[in-house]
Length: 85
Image (cartoon, rainbow, N blue to C red; front, top):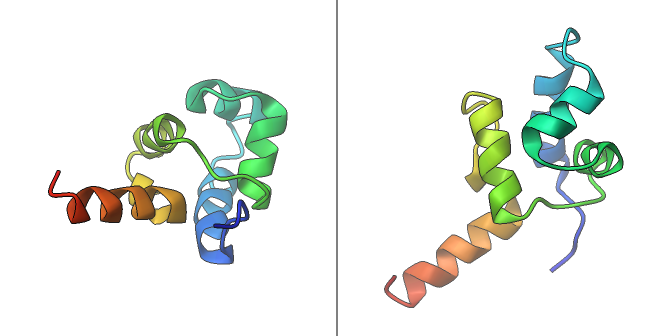
């Protein structure tokens, strides 16, 4: 699986961040539990979040960017369902 995010996933996070210019990039990074460079890679589509980071993003965006929007998280959930978890 590619480590690149689809434009829909990236745009959802980038749009949410852009709707809140009062929150600086370092603050978003702190809220998501990542470094500022990692934050930029997430909104730029070069990285996918870990499950923990995806949950942090969902929580810190008040559900505007659900963890299940990320393709790697969807794959994990699908695999868990197949295993009967």
